[in-house]
Length: 312
Image (cartoon, one colour):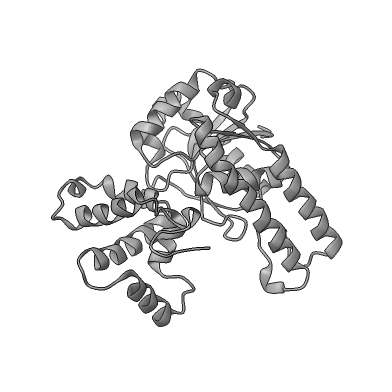
């Protein structure tokens, strides 16, 4: 199956990146959002992504360390080719369409990439409404960080053409794409998504079976939970926890800086799925309360200008 028209549902940290990278690689992209207010809140992310792509590509002319795998297939790229890629970044921003209409988002879609909030009820409602507008051969994938595709397969109305496609943050640089089906996913749909991931500059990473958190988050989420537990139980402050990890391992980022990049709303939704999060005296309950306090204050992470840290 040839994929040309791609709809991305959601304009958050990863939704915006997925849409921009897909448009940068020459696909026709529509972004679906719930309201006009959501559209206006999402657009600055796309303007910022254009700036990041342009600045990174310009740096690649003189600095080999600036090379990003998702932008060019090889670091051996000429200044002329880089200028052409900068033109594609401009065109990506200009050509992305925004809509709040299910019909407009779905009617020509070969592929829908769902990247909405990590909330099972919201995802189920989205899939059920979307199902009535999709072409017969359209494939639907979820970018869910922790939820299994088998949870939503029936709600999509096309379980054989439904699977997961999970990206890492800063996908132009960290260009992984974990591809995970459920027991009812047909092989042709799985193979089409592997091919699509490669076509947008990712490295496809096929999983043989469902795994909560895929490969990446099966390792990352326990790491972040451990850091949040240290903070929630009063062991140390986020800055000290991050400093300890970075100095001892040589890692460029600590867990709380990573949480700011992921987004505190996503982190809150994940911890809230733990039944113990309803008990304010439990560790998950304390973590949820700390996150909610920041979210309610508008400190949702790097895109908001502040999370656990402040950003320009």
